[in-house]
Image 1: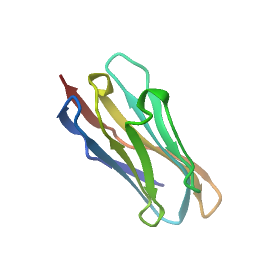
Image 2 (image 1 turned 45 degrees about the vertical axis):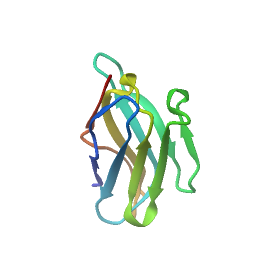
Image 3 (image 1 turned 135 degrees about the vertical axis):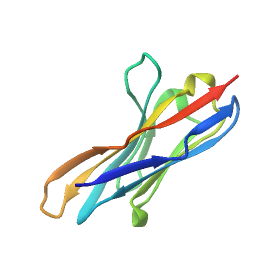
Length: 120
């Protein structure tokens, strides 16, 4: 079983920055896709950014130019650098990791979420 733990959330004023981290742990697995999602109060969970094993990234339009996803394959860790934060970025941010075990069993694991609050 692959476990995922996020960290780095907090409260910042509008225009500020935060860096989220997400580490995957377990035995004998390889990761394909790592992604960040977010869920604001009363809203559905939505994708924010995704990065594949070869480093290809994609960001939702609302965060392009402000957020940047990256990963450290040696540490099985994905990051989300968030700059120029806006109030509408306030949400619980979730990390998602997908891959397969050494037994070729596919997995798709979610973290517990980390709160990001942006104040005006």
